[in-house]
Length: 491
Ligand code: AMP
Ligand code: MG
Image 1 (tube, helix red, strand yellow):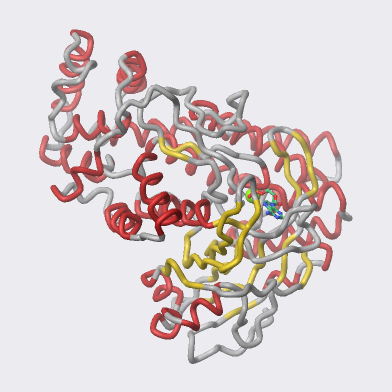
Image 2 (tube, rainbow, N blue to C red):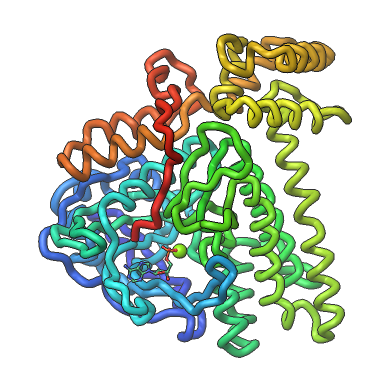
């Protein structure tokens, strides 16, 4: 690996393994400088874990670095090439407004991509301005950090800079750059790019690189590429089950937004569901409900099928055999997803092991929640603390019957009720980034340059399972507004 010397002063210890890939996979170029960068958010805890010097990055140095105006010594930034199926349609894409600064090697020896999003035009910009705006970058910071605190694999957010330059959208907005930290930015779309427009040798280089970086355990398999496919399938099954358990809706699960590392990536129109309903869609552009809450597991399978297709030439020299291997691996996804999902749901109900009837126990509850428009998070919170009164659902006979059944099921286990309650406290968050809270915090930050609400929200979101009284006000669902909540891609 082409190691640069460690930058003692600021703690940068950047490596550039991506440059080992054939040149078609990236373009080396620097971020476009901005006029008056100001550091508006800086994740000091994350910076420390990355081995960065928090003191020097807090001030002017941070503004200069996280805007791309000043590069760490020896930095070799690049924009990555990729493709993707967007709402089902194939397109050649690439980082149109992002630069990979390099891969930070942490004091513990882990490797993380440091990427700027909104850092200027690249050969992949396709007519876009290469910039991002403040609201959506703050939003990505909030939601990604909330996901991390919830225990869900995700890219992280290290910093947000206001560029001091306008970004022209439907109105004039403030330009901004987010610094994203990721296990890598390898996507299903990176393989689609290789399979559609590059040689088999180049595809093989990409697959070998991905295996070395994320799945070294399959390197010595008889068929490492099948191992790669199986591992990616496993991580997505686990990830999407976790999304479902907290009511997270990604909103734009295009293949370019599915990371092979198994991290949640690309926070655009994502949002958390308040009222439980499988057909919940927040994104204004998702008119068909392709990425609705209840459809996310299916879309995971769809994306993984696109991934498997790209690997066919590597799976076996005989096409029919390659297809068979891919189909067998893909067939493993749904049962695996269902197992993860049910395992998670039963623990949310304080059950330590599964019994045959547990699927119907869970589904009966979910069906009632849908029928009575119950709040997803607060229903589980209510069960956790045995506070299930005074909701439209709780006063019904069917819920009371379900409650008895659940309590009987719970007392049949050998673990004590106290242990069961503890399990529920650990698995049912009190705090999710509620849409109305996120909007209030963003509005104050964007319109009044007041970051107080945002900082308070970030602090509360750090401990979703703490269950302390100070959090209570953040558990309230929104006041009914009579119109559905909508999110926008907001580039
Ligand atoms: P996203 O919706 O953020 O996943 O972006 C989809 C694609 O559009 C990616 O290739 C982005 O790099 C590109 N893109 C989004 N916004 C811009 C922009 N303002 N300028 C250039 N490219 C962009
Ligand atoms: Mg994307």
